[in-house]
Image (cartoon, rainbow, N blue to C red):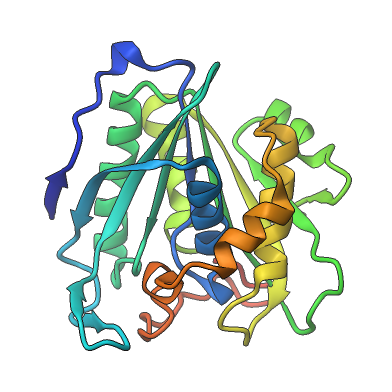
Length: 252
């Protein structure tokens, strides 16, 4: 794994830091939500990571410019709280690579002193939900109750969460005692992009974290981004998603 540090972070200067993760998965739900928050808050990119177990290709945009697959960390400095963000172009393609990447992310958030890890992902369904709900899974009863109190949230009723969006918050809890929560917005399994599901995640976090974002203005900014396809990586075909235990729904 290669690491490119763009800005050094001094943990002693951070204020009650937390982390929000949204790696690419079904309908890019978690990734678009994280990108929306990065754009809305004006977060700054501080580190890029190039895992050796990412798919073995590069992304070429519509202008013919190519780039290597990567993940990126961002930071937003708030008045009372600092928030780290993590997203990327792909996920590791093997279990070994996934756990290696997850361990690195958990150690990084621990070294920065993060108090909470939030992962954003999709809850895949056979139909397109008119109003996507957010299913909540957490590493503690207190977190589960806090986030499931939201008007559009329900407790996740059991199953699996595959990929980095599932493993990162649980690794942080297991290795370093940092509590985590996974927020899964309902979407259809065959959609390549679902802004409605991503918006449900942003709305929940805007309320529960008191971010005070103007969501109408945020949507206008997102639609106006000329390089949104590059940010989302929607032109590449990602590795096949691991399906958890037999049954439905599958989430990633």
